Image 1 (cartoon, rainbow, N blue to C red):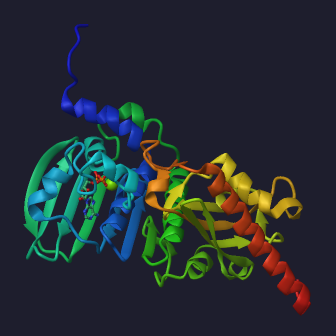
Image 2 (tube, protein in one colour):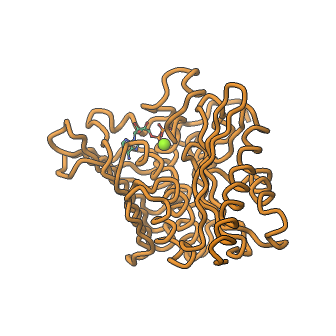
Image 3 (cartoon, protein in one colour):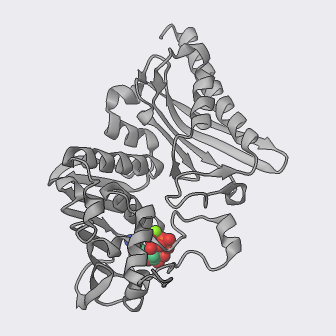
Length: 343
Ligand code: ADP
Ligand code: MG
């Protein structure tokens, strides 16, 4: 075959593979956009594993009517303008890839309104082609409806798992963000049934209790420690469970870097479990919701298209800070228990 430049729709479908693997990845990208838009309420609805329909509704800034089509162009973003920005990222998104990727492999409706626009805008786009743009009344914010994901890429559709598996992946994603952003009121509906809801009052412990129950809530220990090294400040804060409360899986360990959920990369998990030392038995893992906060310049988030892996400028400082913060919290707790005779 001669060398040819790919047709833009095909190029977008190929690129979409990196960002949109399954319904849960669509949910992830869209809720990140809602968070970036300053939403205080985010509602996620999924039907039939999210394969049939996903709806993500927020009360964020909305998209100006004359920019709605642009938002769906490849590499179109309102978050980054120069390469230096990448090293001081304060938003979850920055690649300008999510909307065009999703729209190339699904039927998408975007209903949005900014406070400055009198009336909302509805844009319908399917397989990367704009179908219609119509004015429509709505409140300030944005609602994305994604129907029939992968309807035009049958090969990818075959990789979808059962509805139950896809639904549980969606729950996992929403849980992670609900813990990263306790100041946002999160609601998740699966096939019309309420699956989770957080109060959005800014208290991480309240979010943990909503998600994991009051008994787990009682067993959580508050962590908050700031470490300084050379010119770098690392604050580790959140909650970890008592050594007596554990899980057989690591899926209850939630780690965030500047409120961005990150894959519990082996070493970070190890640094936390190291703090428990002999208190945790082999194969048992604590329940953790910890945020590592440091200057955006001290962390590179542009390591992977899904943005769920990071590199630290001073890795050993961050690792040390993590272990010390958890160890100190555990030690303080056991001292209190010894004094008061509880435990
Ligand atoms: P990125 O998030 O990397 O900028 P996206 O493709 O996810 O790229 O989104 C493109 C642009 O569309 C964003 O930069 C933002 O300006 C706008 N946008 C997307 N979703 C929302 C939303 N829920 N509320 C407001 N603006 C949005
Ligand atoms: Mg985005």
